[in-house]
Image (tube, rainbow, N blue to C red):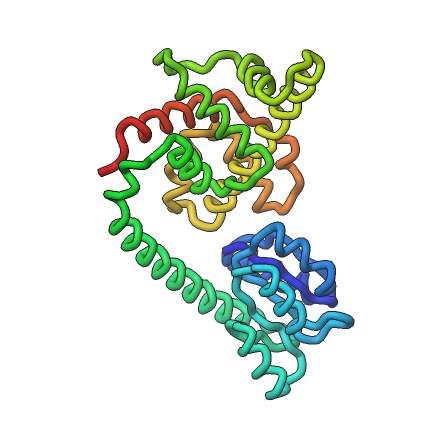
Length: 298
């Protein structure tokens, strides 16, 4: 589970974070001391569960939840409250709050509440997966006849949580470029040549092509780093997660993944120093996309 903590009391945030980490309940991906500052951080990091204080100045917990829901946030909430007020509690439950944690914070209560919330989250996700599987099963025959290389690549990128990342369109364009070529070589050409060829589709001036080529390289690198961070986060929470087990060892060096997982566990900024093998990632994606495109699952 990926947690975000919103509380104007620094001691409470520190205590909750310590309980989560020491109880092996998941990872804390962010925190904020007010509802206003929490909004953009939560919307950009997409935590599974937000621990949020009920009484905060300017924007209280209920108002913050309302703003997040209006902007499309789908995660879960646990309310932290020092005051027992039936009317406010009722309002919180109406906003889809899962449970309450009472102040002063009690380690046993926090652990029990978060374990129950995690169970609910996993159950809902399982039910959603089953529902989507049934829908996909009914539509498989229709979809297979219209399956494109874009569908294949986006499906893989979606599993790694990077559809919509700044460089995902560049990665997709490279895969389409490679697979639509007449030659059947499974080896990638030099990355520099690929970036320049992709850049030449939108730029004509030589200087502009070189500039766009460099921008493409940077966007793709950042997107692959995001994929590694997403998979490493899954591995920290659950080492047997199917996406982590399948994609992490295939697309990345084991040492890279371990370094990223360690930085997440230690809540450090080491991810900025992690090196990724871009060519390996694109090579594996190319081979896997080609295989799934020509031999779709039955």
